[in-house]
Length: 320
Image 1 (spheres, rainbow, N blue to C red):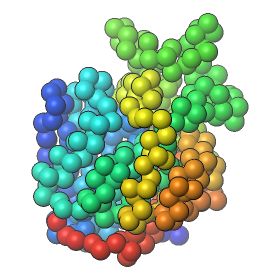
Image 2 (cartoon, rainbow, N blue to C red; image 1 turned 30 degrees about the horizontal axis):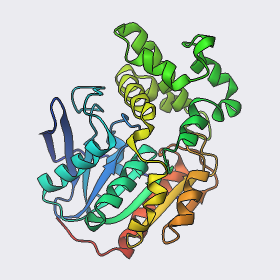
Image 3 (cartoon, rainbow, N blue to C red; image 1 turned 90 degrees about the horizontal axis):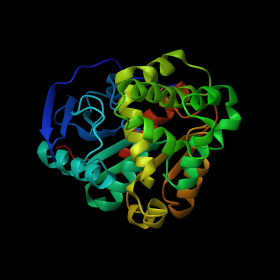
């Protein structure tokens, strides 16, 4: 089974001003003349981590990490103004032009798969290939499953902690209830709601309990951006038209793609991947038997690293 490549440090870091007040953190590592790959992180609001560099051979790939608006090292942290899906697609194009990339591989999971698909549908000529994990179509049913009724029946003990900040009278619409608290002027109420929201996601993300993952999701810096931005997007149906990704799947047909999805993914059930696969049969769907949602699970790591090599073998890579 393949494991992550050795740790590396970025060889270039950039701060890129986009629509005020947003400033993006962008970094490059690996081979400056290698095959360009953009890591599209999850959430929305999750930010990139150092481990995201380690899915790629640093001698062969120009590894580009970008923290989306309000996420990670981008500023202002957890900012909702001017933060929507179209803006993020524009930002990816801004980064591509800034770095002088013609075409690149997109590597994204969960919300990162959503955003990668939307970008690829808008700019198919700029995409060498797609390696996507934990497909998330962002349909109302997908949001309802995880934040209202579905995963709650698989993890009823964790669900009780998710419900705890919300009075019973508001529990019929939990996304709205959380949104009121996550946008409250009361900072203590904000962070309490953010930690409950984010820890719920972290607890459900892996097949086997993983305290390291839960600790990461519960960190205040991670939790406030993840919870506020996710809730903002989900209150607005991810700023997508109904079934937009499935509707526009025909635009992806010429792009080599591998879809990696854990069989026991409770955050984004495998039905998301199957629904996409039905309308995009050219994509190679790989359902991973011993895995849930997280990119850190051993079987998912193995599948993603193999997927990168397989997609590049099918694409026509160009450097720069």
